[in-house]
Image (tube, rainbow, N blue to C red; front, side, top):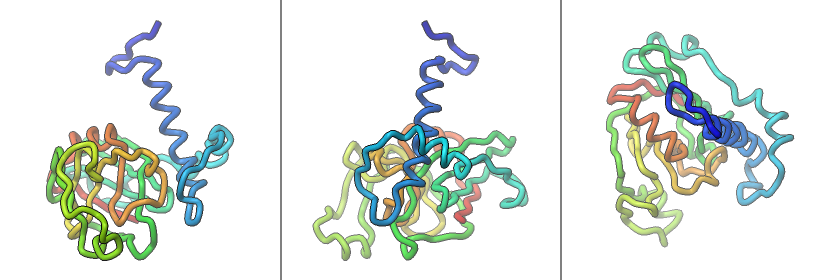
Length: 199
């Protein structure tokens, strides 16, 4: 029998969610470069070994205030940190760009929010992958998942993914990816103008 917590989560859901949150960074630390495809292994040892790199952070070293909230993406630890205006904090495992030349760092902001985003490959993606379609509408085949936060930099987004194997890995063409459940939560907490810093 499960017991409901104040916020509506069951004990079973809480434990399962916590286990998935801990397992994801172990993949992030263990799969890099040449070993980017499927890895089958027991994650329990890796979680204990690597949990320190997936850590909570304070917002003050990175932002002067929390006006409209703040998102910090740590490329190296493959984690997205979010603070709302009232200081509420959330930490999510993420996918990050596949290579350093696809990675952009610095300050920007959320300029647009879309539920059920459409996807078109960028010209450089199309050059690298000419077989890719020119357009994918909203739905289960869309690489942007269920929600997308468009950033002030052209072609850069924080978005969901239907391919959960990508989370915790260097696997994107430049964007930051989250589990669909996590991007839906983040989408609900952010607004146009939310600060974003990629480090």
